[in-house]
Image (cartoon, rainbow, N blue to C red; front, side, top):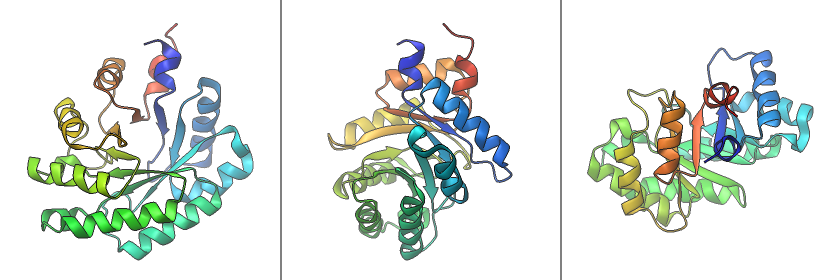
Length: 217
């Protein structure tokens, strides 16, 4: 896999709570120059990015982030506003407490409602694997599949752990054929990126990939 093939799978990410507009500009300029799949940014920056860059940048944003326990109605409102402001892709965090309580049907219905709010826009569902056991991860694979979300995503990067190869392999066993995989959280080397792509991930969420690849031919 060459440099550009890798970059085409990168959601170039800046989600620090203290991210400045200069940080966002640097992110977007890199995304345009290196042709990353998207920029993944806080919702508060979507409109300004869209007004500044138009369609030069594919905007991904986060909803219910990073803890996931906002009520469904709030997540739907956030989603609708993000799309109105110019986002094309939505990464939403499930209600982790509902998962831990075994309320899998409730989580599935929330995902379905948010997908409805997304319409034709891409929905990625963050299940925050570091907090879940295997049974819960499998249940989330089924919920994401049944609710017709576009991606299952490992992590926010704000939890106690990030993406693992073992979780990607588990996902592949239990998601439906129309669901893709995004790995995120703790992906800090080029070897990490290549390993996750090699396991079949379609997207990688990281703030480091562009910097790692700048010197690579």
